[in-house]
Amino acid sequence: MHEFRFDPVPMPEAAQALRGEVRAFIAQEVAQGAFTPSRNSWSSFDADFSRKCGARGYIGMRWPKQYGGHERSALERYVVTEEMLAGGAPVGAHWIADRQSGNQILRYGSERAKRTILPKIAAGECFFSIGMSEPDSGSDLAAVRTRASKVDGGWSISGTKVWTSGAHQTHYLIALARTAPKEEDRHAGMTQFIVDLAQPGVSVRPIYNLYGGHDFNEVVFDGYFVPDDMVMGEPGMGWKLVTGELAFERSGPDRFLSTYQLLIESIRAVGTEPDARAANEIGRLVAHLATLRRMSISVAGMLERGEQPAVEAALVKDIGTAFEREIPETFRHLLATEPTLGEGTSYAELLGMTILRAPGFTIRGGTREILRGMIARGLGLR
Ligand SMILES: Cc1cc2nc3c(=O)[nH]c(=O)nc-3n(C[C@H](O)[C@H](O)[C@H](O)COP(=O)(O)OP(=O)(O)OC[C@H]3O[C@@H](n4cnc5c(N)ncnc54)[C@H](O)[C@@H]3O)c2cc1C
Image (cartoon, rainbow, N blue to C red; front, top):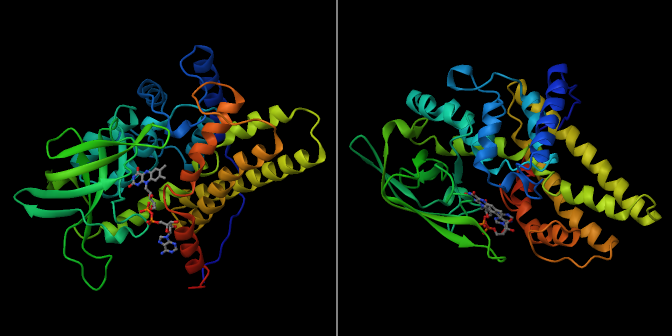
């Protein structure tokens, strides 16, 4: 049975100093009008801001210097991501590449992939999407039907990915495809590929959400050619790689700070003399936030020590995304504000847009049911 431990991790001095530096940078950017703090920080695409982050060394922080990285610790990276989210910085353009795709390339990419792609990611000039889900395989990722067949010098991919966030604005994605027929072990015979979205044979079509916004896409491969040196690891290793990638995706502060702006604005709206019910609710939410933070920092500490905290990451995501969803519901009942839709700065719009986005928080990156299955397995219950 897996033993869950979330030991406290002291923040090293270098991380504390970095916190002040990032806060000052964000305050300066806001003061100069470079951006208005966003309510949807890690889904807000702003290539100029990403370039500035790259120039300041805030992307690819843990990667080796020879690939454009900065050889900083997981806790220093943690502090930067936390400050960016809390400050509402528009980090969406580089978020996926920095959080997961770049790490995958560093571990499993060819030397050419590492040399040509990682420095551009770290400079804030190269952005990635996630090519996992398909029309008939979301939770059951092993059911992917996108196929890659061996051809001279590489692989030819055909099939369809769906819900591909940001693919209309990014340069690459990492696609999971079937490279051998299904065997008894349904996790065998899959491979991850680096896909350059500017090459022929792949097209990106918009999927508009209920509000008419364009975040999602459908990505269609029709004989798309990938050279051998854009294969991740060895052909057939795809399942191991994709589950490792999901561990990077699940434990960070982006899994409990998506509605942080609403929490702060709501506390302001409640005012300095809350009634007993409001005081209770705010106290409870802030206590949860403090606990989640400690758990997430503890996972960053495990990553720093080279451990594989996949089950702990699933737990942080399960509790963290439930917390994110609870914030709009709580204040909707506490405050007499009618939520409205719009990108303006009023509290009613902030509440309305958060309610609209909230259902996705517990779905993206793996649903709660799937995470709970993993946690139960970790506890030896299934
Ligand atoms: C905002 C957002 C952004 C996204 N971005 C991306 C992206 O960039 N790239 C990408 O590849 N995907 C992306 N996705 C897709 C996301 O990963 C899938 O939607 C998710 O994994 C669920 O898959 P599904 O939609 O096919 O639902 P299904 O798998 O059909 O699930 C439907 C319901 O059944 C439940 N269920 C399924 N299997 C089980 C089971 N074994 N036990 C118990 N319950 C089960 C699920 O929990 C869910 O409630 C995004 C989704 C959202 C909402």
